[in-house]
Image (cartoon, rainbow, N blue to C red; front, side, top):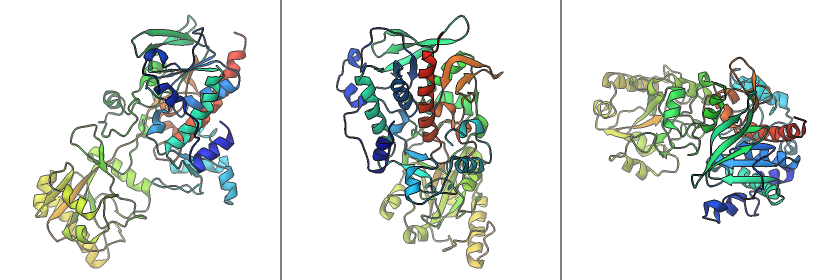
Length: 493
């Protein structure tokens, strides 16, 4: 991926050439969904997944002379870049230097290990290594890069670059091809895959290297519960993140790791009572953007965190220990009438209307009535409100809260349920420092590699949210592997 194209796509917007995905979607015939034809089913590299890892892997492998097959289950390329914010974090970049910011990969690595409390996999962090961060615990230096059109900024650049290799006949793309199984030789090495096309035909492809770049499992409720032991709450993840690569790695003798670092953000307002649910919206719970006028109580009716605590990480960790990883934002009529709007992008009138029967929005004339509507202990809820009101009166909140604008006592009372949930998969395929899929004894499975979100946030970020450390490793590992596996294909068998 050229530096100039990356810079142009991320700073001023987009490449305007027709994308690979757009070209593919011009045809409604399944037989024409391959973007280049092949006279053989043998390749130098097979890439499963056309997202933030698979695209750069295919590009760099093709640029190094390899013949690449890119298999994508969905009808379009891009993977989770279609839903991602597109945050990247990098050190020593041209943009940092232009702004006079001194940074290095070593400082970036140290920052990630600090933010994750050394729970991130150090072997995976070192190779990848501007604002300080928005929505996550900030870095020590400004090192965010953020696409102006979120993940689409990155996707367009990658597709434009890939199109050159498709036109040159070095990359064969098969959309709507679901990989069914890995082909394993007599020595235990992976030698290819079988994939089923949209018309139900199964195809066999061979290559000395197979890269699993198919994303996470966080759009698969059953697999999510199998691995994490929790319900899948939101429909935020990319719908094709169904864990296909995880199952393939397991079938070849690999294993998963990182689930112990399961982590959540500080909550979403869900649209429905059934799960997984779309979002109704986002409450503004960042004290630097909107100081809280409300209190937060858990399923026991108790306050569990200082609502204006500056550390995002501390608040997320506090929520992680609450029953069901959920809480309620509680306030009264006085707050509704006088505070800045709580729901991002909503007017005060929209807020008021939501309490007339919308799921996860609750109202009661008294605190006892509100508690009954929510389903929590009224005695504990009243004690929480009384304790907060004492802090407002005395200036000495028992949790140390500093923003104490007014007591809560003017009925009716309101509550909005917040559900903590991750947007990425915690557990990932175990790999070694060369990104080879490994068995439990550490032995690599020859010919099988994995990179990107399939490695899991538990390995890439540890038990924390380190901004940009899902997209950045995906892009970087894809580029490194593409080049390395092209070289592997040239080596004598």
